Image 1 (tube, rainbow, N blue to C red):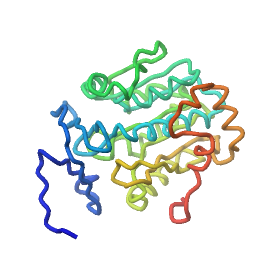
Image 2 (image 1 turned 30 degrees about the vertical axis):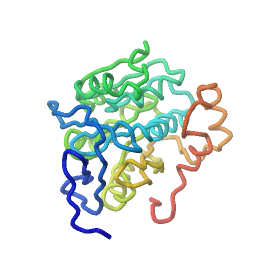
Image 3 (image 1 turned 180 degrees about the vertical axis):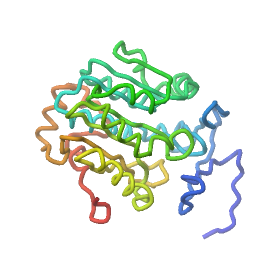
Length: 295
């Protein structure tokens, strides 16, 4: 094993996930082509191409998505909560500036879709340089795109949304406020009685550091709190990544594969067959945790 290797900053992107919090793992991505870099009012950004991963978006030195596996993240964070709900009509995504959650959610027969992101520049950048992520979803007539503080928006909409997706950055920088107990309380109030929320959480490497504590906070406001597993090769976890589902009245683990399949086929039709990762069977299996990750 070679030690003391020096990576040139113009040739490699080095990611230390959660800088200053966890230092157990460092990832290096070769920069094949630098596409765009700079700073918005809220965060630093970099778009580059890397062998095997294609185009990559990093915010505040943390990988947000790669062209090779973004569909896994977006299919699982959108379709699992939407198909857990018996008949969702009003949908909200907080964050999600790249447009991937919208791309998947507009495939459903929803009546209203809202996307609230604080950083207008990131949305514009993704639409221009990463158009394959949103794939035209921003142009859907049902979509209401707002550039505002997600916390404030949710507080202003009580008992309104059937499904809420919190597609935030990690708990550093502008995303930190979306990991607080007060925010989880407001999300619960913003949901309808049988509403379902899902939160981007982080790698299972952080089970004791972040995941258990977040679940404990959510259980103060939701009866059902369940972890969801998915594979994310480009993320610092190496593979196992965690979302967390929350509902006041719906237990997602009680839904059979046949019920999920029936809902998916009815709502998505042929679009279900075009998905690259999500299936009703994967949906069902993603809620099963190994013993060490059970809440």
